[in-house]
Length: 109
Length: 233
Image 1 (cartoon, each protein chain N blue to C red):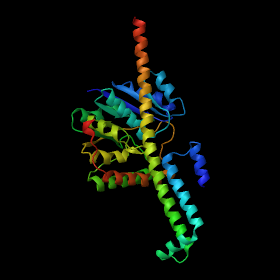
Image 2 (cartoon, rainbow over the protein chains, first blue to last red; image 1 turned 180 degrees about the vertical axis):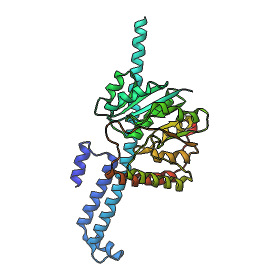
Image 3 (cartoon, each protein chain N blue to C red; image 1 turned 30 degrees about the vertical axis):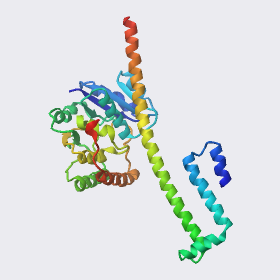
Image 4 (cartoon, helix red, strand yellow; image 1 turned 120 degrees about the horizontal axis):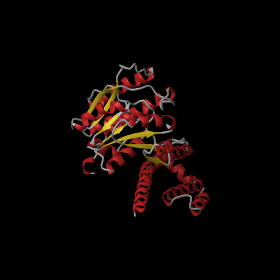
């Protein structure tokens, strides 16, 4: 996963803002895989008897939060898209009107 | 006062000619907002020599109306009339809508269907309408007869407010909340409407449940939001 993230960044297909999040996540997953001990101590500390279920819980919460984040990003993007479409349409109209008046003045000259 | 008639049109190539011919009888500038249509809507408007603004992609009726409102604001119009491109609205009824705005008695005038001409609407629409009336009364304390009506006149204040904030799809009901939250005066005027000429309404039964849920949520959220500072624009 770490390699995939690095490759996506290199290809310019992942913005740094998101890249940072996923790089961080990859590192955590690697750390968890390497040291089972850390996970076990954490699970016992919060009173979970079966350590992997802590992993699932954290993973689930993480995915939920990331998804809400994407939802807000998409909403923001669609709002700016909305404004841009309107502005573009109005500018196109302005340009046409300008061309028409220009043609008229050229003809009268 | 200078008025602009906004005709939002999405794939209304078949109806548009009829609608624009009808509007010729009313002496005001007309603007067709082509909301990313796949048919000849834009060509029809151009052929008839009517001003036309074209969205490159479809935004929904709310986006189209808002584009018209922004256009009106930027080109020095005092008020705007929303006149649907499907042929349901009649140009000879515009006068009734405009009078309260010209007198300065209202900021938003909504044309309500009267039953004189035997207007029929589906049961699901009626249920929705009653439900929305109830919700509007709960949220704003105002009594409206037909919150889904799309035949409207926007006064100078409404022009400013809605050019900043107008909902995308199914905007009619939600915009009443926005207007009343920002202390605009809303008036209803009875008007006579036709049945649809051709094409289908954007609301069908399968979608209407989703529509009601979505609009209800949007209305509640809208009611919770603060006032918009539209006077400074």
